[in-house]
Image (cartoon, rainbow, N blue to C red; front, side, top):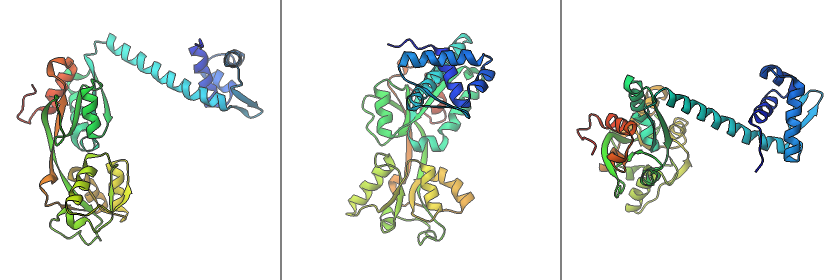
Length: 303
């Protein structure tokens, strides 16, 4: 294994950022000759040129670009290590990894977590949040890769514990000029003659809509598939398609972009999210505190 010097990597990144050894040296408070020597040592160790040198400065070679990407990752990781160990010295109470579905994150979850972190007793707690599809949320919690998961409660939670979180409502979002814009409500089957924009096939909402259409012997006319909820609403704003997505997020686009949100006359349109976890006693104190905060007001005490 190569014994790469971290300071040399940091100086190499600085040179690539400045595209100039002299400017990088001034920024790093080191002589240009010292930087040149360190880069020469890196090139000798790796057996390849890392910089193309010209009168206007330097640019990384193909090999240099590959090293630059890895060096940036190393610097980022070291920064995280430094920050987290410093926090531990300042009496951090713990770190919580939470995974959640796109709908949960797009609605109230981030606000709820922000409120949790603003409480003086929780200021030393760190939270990592990752967006995943609902099935992946449960898998990561089950495998122990995340302490808490937030997703739609219509899935099979198996051996996982769960408590209710929040409710939302799915609505039909249409351009104001669309034929369905003036309806007081609509059944989903009545939307199937129009082109729609949806989330990826593995998302819970997309699977629900596909199943609902199949029960009617129909199929959804997907015109566009996008990666997130905001993008879907923007497609509707452009008048390209209609979509079924959460009313709480759609309210912003209704207010600022004039979209029409039409209630869905479907029993599945009202949803409840749940917080999943393996076992309360196996959770860290920080995760238990967050679980209690998120489930507060649901009428259910986490078990």
